[in-house]
Length: 163
Image (cartoon, helix red, strand yellow):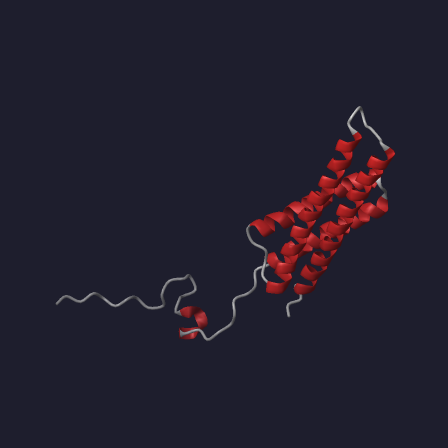
């Protein structure tokens, strides 16, 4: 088992937990707005409530999808590629932005959580991005694959013959 796998498992678990937490928090806020019959600048309270719930579901699904990518990375022990890599990079950017906002709006505890998740995602991307050394196997003709130090063949090719 690779040492990179635990990082991917941790990222997957944290992102799944965050997906559930974000969805639950936004759903709760939607219920609070609905029951208090609050309005902001003349907006309809029902619209605000439904918007909060929809936003919670969308962000929850987004973080769950990012967690699924991290889980697949852990199971396959291969770096994320294509859309999965883009999702993880976008999740890192989102956590950086949320970290910046949470310091002033929520407090240092939420900021630390966002930065820890950001660091975990970046660690996942960086550890799987490192190139591994090629496997050492038997090499013909002196161990350099038949090439000279400058990449040219050791001996010249045979001269063409005429019939």
